[in-house]
Image 1 (cartoon, rainbow, N blue to C red):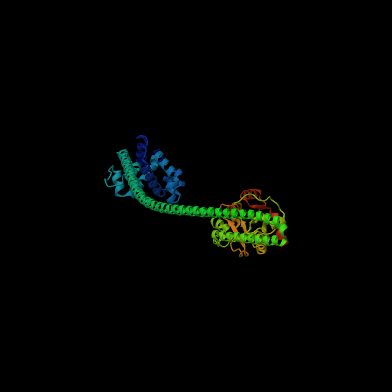
Image 2 (tube, helix red, strand yellow):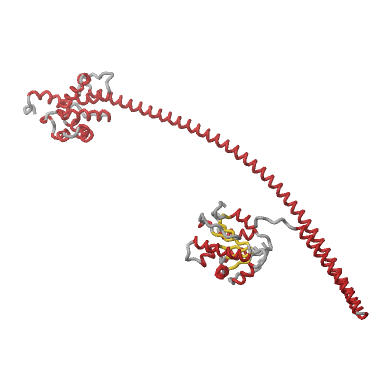
Length: 456
């Protein structure tokens, strides 16, 4: 080979060959390997074309910012396998490194120099003891990595301590909030207990008043019974005297007629006395008129009115006869309760819900005006709309609240009425009819009301 090279290149070639025979390539630390690749990639375009291996010519054409990243593997392989190429490119890199390069080429590692840079230059220039320089750089890199790891662990420990302190502060704040909340709950509990005591006292007073009223009613019933007994005794006495008068009729019609007239007068006077006693009893037991009906209390507690946030024994059989409905509505103080959508979807299903409601409410207004009865129509609240026109006089329009149905609201209305009041419930729902019948209402089918409305 020495015969083919120019005389000026022979020492360089011989040094490269001797270096190749020195021993196996050392394993470079990763930072040193990357720095060697970067230095060689930067110096690669400076080599003459005849000194550049064929494999490196393609890499030399890469852009400077991409050469080390894309051609780093080829450069590292060429440096390890081609001592002559390494010798040529190292001379340029050492020259570019200035004093640091000259010191490393002389086998000296300045104390203030970067150990990675020193190891990279030593690997390329390979002065005497270059393996020791690389080993020292590896130790320094490892020490820096260990120091960085320790520093990272310290930072993590500090962060964990900060988070723990923050969590402790947050926990303290939450504990203070919980203590405040507990105090508030205890205060509210005390208020509730006080209200419960007040309500209990009011309930006991109401029970006492009810007992007094019951005692008064029993007294009046006893008085009425005594009056009735006196009346019966008087009637019996009068009948006896009437028989005696009839027995004496033979003595003369005039005397008998006078006696009978006297008896009749006394009987009339007795009956008038009983009537006045009964009127007095009615006055003593009379209750003040109420401005709210029982259905209004049920509506306030379990229903929504449009435009605002809002018992006895079985007495009739189901029927769709409008004549029977007229008879029931003719009862005094009757209350008509209508399952709204049950009627409209049976009679006006082709209309919109708004038109169904309007037509039914208008028809019920006519019934209320004709009969003077109390009328309540109930719709499911799930389809409630705002802006409904005002209901006709005598008609109460209700919507069930969220979570309840019109059927349940109807049953509550029936249960809220006093025993003995005539209640008429219009619904073709068998479950509704059976439920209200058990509470003494008259269930009627939807067809009975539809026929009644068709006559209006």
